[in-house]
Image (cartoon, rainbow, N blue to C red; front, side, top):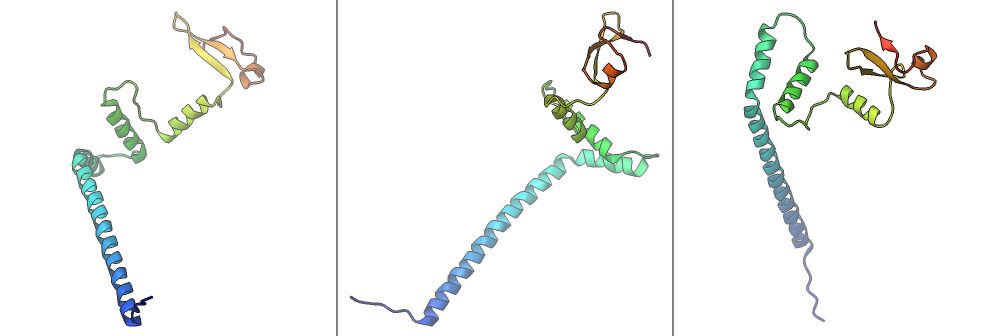
Length: 146
């Protein structure tokens, strides 16, 4: 059996060389990902430059106070509305929670469902048992007058 030995200094040099190569490959890969993301960010900035321009004008010239989150929500809703797809919509976090609660049969309110009659009046369509509406005496077919 023929054994080959490697000196300790040669082994250390090989390990250092492997470590340096690993660092270089990692750095290049990370830089490439960063550049791709930066490119995407620049594309997004160019794509939404008009929106930023309007926001800057509003910030500079609008007299009065407004809730920026509400303005952004309306902008996002308008963006989705602009798709022209009746099945697409934008909902705020609060609206989404309300929709999800309804889907899970978790409702909030007085415990009555209201519908419109053919004459345009509002009437009680259903009353949940043991609800506030039930305890107050509301009944199906009651007309809401005020």
